[in-house]
Length: 113
Length: 121
Image (cartoon, rainbow over all chains, first blue to last red; front, side, top):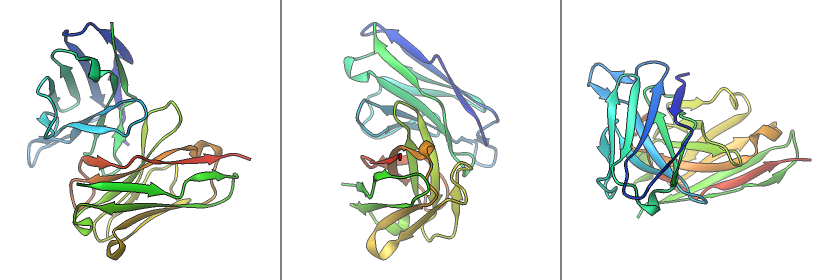
């Protein structure tokens, strides 16, 4: 299985400041035939199911604020929250779907400093 | 509006069985692959199993292979997970998730609220 790692495990950011979460896959999730990275990001708030934020590594889901952005290719990816808002407090997971046996990263908890 | 409603969870003894259901509405069910994802208390997300639109492709995590069986009934807009030989480590909130693709697999656009399975004597 493709192993996903995330860093940091948690971070605390002041309101309005930038939050950056890193995700690394044990093998490339870039499919050469279509040049797409099979990588998604989810946000999970306490007591709620995960919510899709980003897919194909950098495409924002409809309705997701533009302060959320995804970047990276191959094995290294980043989720950036450009200006942290109180409602962004959550755990963020990356997921690879390059393999039919999808795997998630362990999650990164984002709090307000 | 897409709705996924899981049911069938509960307290069960180790070694026993349980069948989870997911009732889908608000979309054409047989156009999409579906999945089960679980989350142990205080832990991260673990993909359990997925099934393509016509049940032609099925996948399982190693942790459940041989014990769990995924199935779907497109006429009833329903997804199922038959869980046998349950273990304490199967204790988790089980989510039903809708794939963006008809085949396995793309990202999960919609998730249910989950049904809690507790395996304990």
